[in-house]
Length: 361
Image 1 (cartoon, one colour):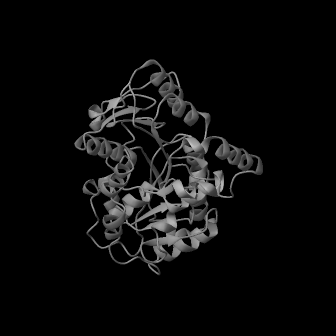
Image 2: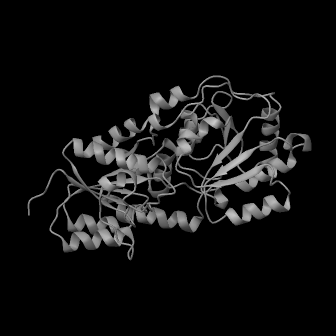
Image 3: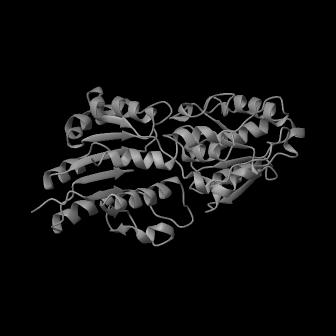
């Protein structure tokens, strides 16, 4: 059976949702288009199919009844196609899945790690399990890709330093042309804030609520914090806001498709997260000339410089965030100047696509 050198598979545990189009969707579309331009055919294995936006141009092979790993394993077992590369996104690293497909086909496996780690690290039992998995299954993965330097270091910490020669960083990037930059001067007193986040406990929005509680009442009168996103923790957050009588401050806007054009209507992005890998919402906000207030987790400090294009406060420290918010609301602290050039020069989606294409050579 002849190997088709220019045919690859992307195995991606990422649900395709028309009401949640974000940075990774734009990357998938741009990467598929770039592959086609290079004469590379791509089969996409997602949990579900889609025909909205540019997904109508992708060759998606979905299966809602199995995990993406089980579906792909079954697919190559029952079809004669031979891939030259398999790239995984949002798929657990160092499992028997990689051994199985490596045994079935002669191909190169590239595993991309998007997964954040807990703020205080894994338990000893989980650390030991990951180290054993690294010994057993890392040999079947040809390249480990971290979406930030933090992620690469986490891969080595999880599975073993012996993986360093085949672990590289390719930063996440954003589609700049769709992000409308703020050109008006930022509001110095009573600026507008937004949150862009999946609503779960680890995103720390409950800490933001507690920080607002600590603010003097006079500062809450005109305070606006719009929250974009959805998730399983939304009801808890809404109940907390109601019980604390902060409904005039927080507004839940849900998941929207026009975020790239909305950032410019605000002055700061708030991201009180406990765990992160490399946040696309941070990159998008900076690309819109909106500074970011966030925590030193994941790769945040690889893009945010305190006092330059944003502010860093310690995760879970609502009192620290409250002090920072008070200084910003009263105009005692502010970010001056554009934040977009950093993203243009280092974190564009074009650079991201270029880096992933080079792995296929």
